Every structure is written in C-alpha cells, then in structure tokens.
Length: 164
Image 1 (cartoon, one colour):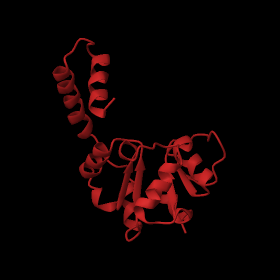
Image 2 (cartoon, helix red, strand yellow):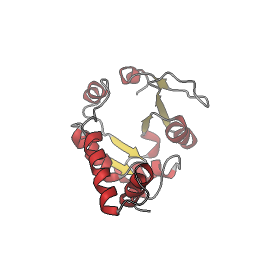
Image 3 (tube, helix red, strand yellow):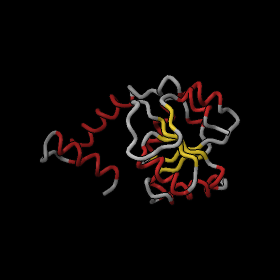
Image 4 (cartoon, helix red, strand yellow):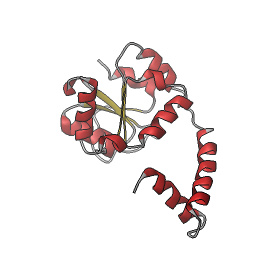
C-alpha cells in the first residue's frame, strides 16, 4: 500500500469507512497542515548541531522520504544534513542493520567510522551494536533500557561526552 493510500485508509478508519478518497484525502490534508504547524526541534538540537558544524551528518529514518524532507525544511534544519536515508526509498527499514550499511555506502563513509544517535533501543541502538558501531541512545524520558546500552544520554548537551 502506498503512503498516499495509507493516509486515506487511516482517515476512513478514524472518521467514516464510507468516505470517498477525495473526502478522506481532504481530511488528512487538514490534519497535516495542523500537525506541521506544531513541528519544532527539541531545545537541545540546534546547539548540538552548531557544535557539530563541519562534521558530516546524516539521517536514517523509517519515515517517508518526502515527509522527512518537509519536516527538516519546516524546522529549518534541511541544510545541516548531507545524507538522508529513508526506508521508503531504501527498501530497508530499521532494525534491519542493512539500512546502516546502505547509508554508509551513500555517504561514502566506512561503516566503522559512523556514530549513530537514536531514540529507540530496539530499532536504533540494537542494530548498531550488532554491526559493531557506536550507537548512542537519546533517552529523553530516562526509561529503563530493554537491553544493556553502553552509551546513553538524556539530552544532546551530554552527547559530547561520548563522541571522539
């Protein structure tokens, strides 16, 4: 099912199973407009990116490529990332470790030099550990990990304690 069809089906489930595609799409667009108007980065993101200025940065996401690009544009961060790998385009999704390998190939960067920062132990950190990469868990809610996590921070301000 395409991302566009998923949106329509979600609206039908929420509002009316008999809604036409046009009605469902219009409702979804209203939702998206409202949703996007509330996008903003966490307070620690811009200071972190400023400290990382000059470093090669990329994003690996299980999200839709167009939506991720739009999100970066709306919050003013699209020029900060050299590589954006989305599962919708790569055909691989986290926690499949191959998406990390794919991202490194796209960046022309050796896998062992990559540090990955993610907010989900299962989909972000576990595959990094399986590949022998340094995965840093951003645990904003200070949750108990489901498995041992060697590197964790509750804010990006503490990230630099774990970077080379």
